[in-house]
Image 1 (cartoon, rainbow, N blue to C red):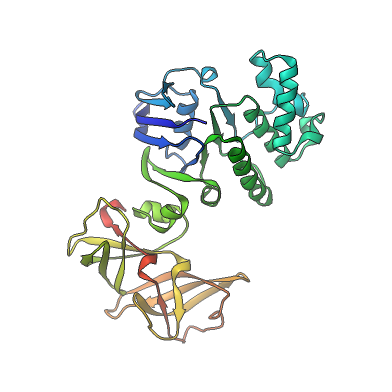
Image 2: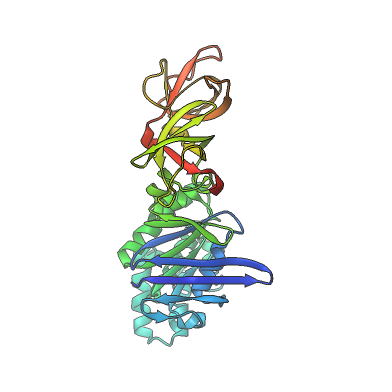
Length: 364
């Protein structure tokens, strides 16, 4: 269990800057996610930590040790790949033992550690099977055991669940978190799957064009995005444009074509000025539908379309502002009560001010 520290990390491929002065502090024993769209630099960052890429500038430290230019085999990291990278001609036990054999570990210790690693992933009874006799989820467990058996200082995971079906992905999310926490591992995990990150991570970093857009715990990043990019990448959101009317004690009032909204200023480095362009961000599940405009942040409109999903309904809400503004909003209602309302029924959508994020427009 070690902390990983990254300072001013820059990596270029020709004229393209893949990583642009990245700073990160990953705590010992933390499950830390690198999240972002394709091409944002998350895999390049993971491969730099693993030693597959040497950065052009900056440094990477494992604890007090500078590993920036160490080759991969001297960093003592375990890695799980998207493709599993298992040897099909070997048994499960032989695959798990491979890294130990390369390190010239004595046979008796290899056998003991392989047994322990397979027990940790609940695969002891499959030790003698060939890889092609296993399901995709079982193969992923073997890949995890192989990474753990060498007792790495840090576990690196590159989209390890992307080849599994939806049900297996859900099972393996829980399993990976359990194993990492029981082993006390520092884990750095790359994915583009927001649900995967929100359900497993202790903290996560959102990358955009080689830079970090935001770092924080899953709930913090989801509820308090600091930019339009983060708000729209993590989950879904309704964005309404407007201008700052006033700011008091971290909350701003914003005048928009749909009416007046009051919400939390989520970027601590931004001091909103009266008249400044701003964005209002509200998650679909944060809206409450009502027959009367009770409470703040109320928007009048009608349900234009509805999708019934059993426990929840998704609405396209045609909002109409007092000043003639109009905009379609996405609203989710748990235990749907308004699913039968037609287009001619006037309703109000409201949101609590702590569920409203006020964003700086130029950072959108």
